[in-house]
Length: 58
Image: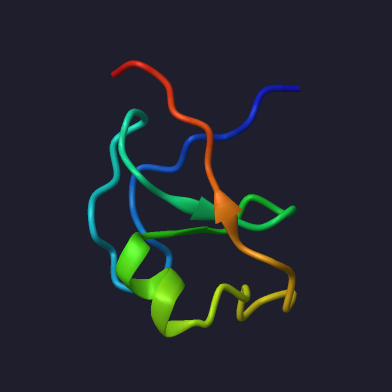
């Protein structure tokens, strides 16, 4: 199963490109860099660690 590359931050709706910087938890909740910092690198849904999402070419 492939990683779902969501195209916007779940918190602020900022657009995210597959090749851009984004952060995900183990459930693939996706956040922008700014929200990741504000959330102290913790997913508000599962409280799991947010890590840098792998990048893909657009």
